[in-house]
Length: 256
Ligand code: DGL
Image (cartoon, rainbow, N blue to C red; front, side, top):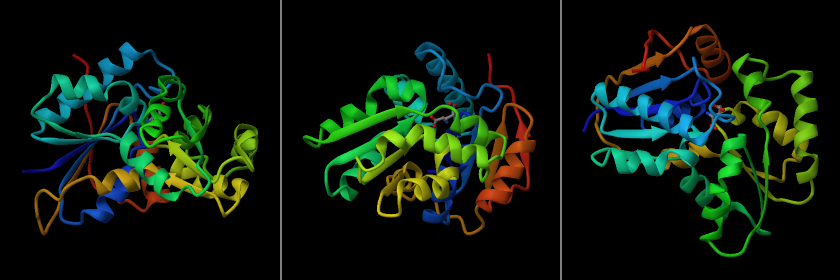
């Protein structure tokens, strides 16, 4: 078994990669960020499936057999399609592990879920949580977080206002909040400050990384980065906010 593919619509998936790198220190990774076409979260299901399929085909062409679908929107909309279409590939999505994490944390069974419009509309989180029994779940699409993170505006007065605007209706009503979008862990500090430190915040990447079974053991591991558009924001956000050093990044065209 070789390297592990990681796919996201942009740079947000680096929050998932960060956990993969920490939890799997001897594993090689290939990351693809489709930043030419981000955001996926406001697109139709058929477009999200088409883009996700092209991304997966690219990663398969690089020789991976396991793919982490870091993008919550793709996990919600395209995962079942991808599993059916590429039956030899092992896929790890975000939803099951994140829900498992939330169930283990909540004490009062009141869970909040924030994500893109497509993720929230899909009701994937509601359905997955329902498999554990009766929980009170509040969901909300919070799409404006994504462009702020993509632009590197992570600790900014404007984002504090948006956090308040979006999350006011959750305050005091939940004890656990699932960040059902790759980009939201960048805003962890601001969200936690607003919601209160007693709220459990579920970072999907942390729980999804636990699902990966260690595959190869290379002492000198490699991480390859690919993007579909300019890598500038990608590199600066990775280095400044995640402490991920990117030595080489390649722009590719994954459209047929
Ligand atoms: N990666 C997406 C997700 O996790 C967020 C950005 C987008 O809308 O493409 O849902």
